[in-house]
Image 1 (cartoon, rainbow, N blue to C red):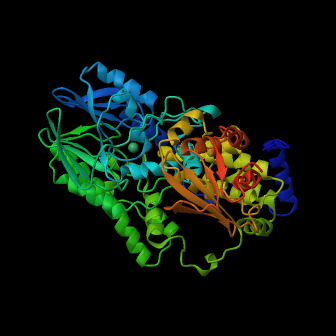
Image 2 (cartoon, protein in one colour):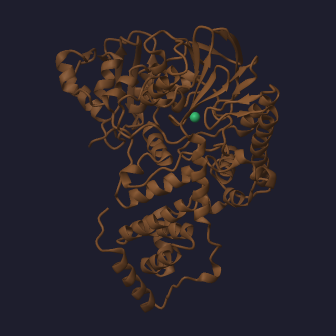
Length: 592
Ligand SMILES: [Zn+2]
């Protein structure tokens, strides 16, 4: 956003205005909350980086873990005539680095890959380990369906929010990530998809438990729903080595992730961690942060971890039943002192307040029980009225400035009022809010919050523009491996309701390469997607196109008119009217 004048000049004017209107606002030092200890918070986060010093650690003979190469660890289990790889990092490039490091340990070939769950930081580097060979890939029976959802309708927003949370834009704005709490950084630069996608589809899946011997190593894979519903743990009974995936790492668990997620069933997570105690592990090798050895130490960690989750859950539900709202609960629930002090429960990834709010809305949804919030005043109107009541933007902005140092949270919230009111002083409010966010960033030990504060500050200052990755050739290539249904669903949520008003049109799509047929029926300003089983009637306008080509067309890699001309896209049935088809497709275009 363009700045019409400098902050200093404007703020001086604001003060003058405030004085003239008789509403002199000063620092009001008497009611300020105690100042945070920013140095201690960022020092704690900086010290946490020691978790991610780049290294290959041998946990027991033949079990190695690569730490600090990517957001997630890679664990290599050496067998008689080959190695098993557990988790593969978030990018081919990062995985190749791990391959090179493991090559110094052994030259045995990779004979199996195991995914502990579907998150991208565990699956995208697989091809670097398989190196073109047919390597069995083990995962839970539901993992692939979760991976298909990577391509889902929420990709744009989840991607931009992930970039804010992991701090991928900080460098572009002259800032630095300290660490990402569970790893040094997400090894993925926005918009750079080269050497990113090396995903392999699981070939060996199971529901509850799978006992298997690979290269002479006995492994037990056990379904352990927690951070994700498809989470599995890997247990080496002979060596008593436990790989808990992402259900345990050295930070308070991310019971809610601020990049956005459906409700995670936290008690299921606690129970899965509790069940691990029964195994009697002597070595714990998480997929993030460093391994731990010693049965007593591991049991202590697993008890503290599961108890912390249950404590937050139970106290939230207790508060819910007493009718307490989410924000009040979030501000009041704290871990018992012995858990709060536990080194594995520090807020370097999840936090207690975010968890409380997630559990509250997981059980009750958004309504807080207050009638005023059933159909509240729209945010812009509310902000404008509050500003007027407070004496105008000038008064509020002067208060923002006065609170910047001692209460940056309140300063940011007041600046939000001016931003939401959408009046002339938006650029100044943006600049002041950015200052408040930088102060908040320096006062938190939580990297997700820090990264988000700093990224939003850069966005407010117009220094970066956080956006979903463009559909690069690599990305389109990656999407080819997925069912075309996902592309059609994405079309449905892209439909322009204004342009489709009054239209009732049904077009059949035949995708020979995937052997499926769908109809898209635009009616009532929506696009209903129907999977067809029979052959469409001749009276239906029918498009025949390979799903692979369709992806090129809807992603803008190729133009529709040319595809119609060269036969890539064939139209038949009905009036076979190409003009009508192009008009129909234009309903889904975003560029008008
Ligand atoms: Zn992970």
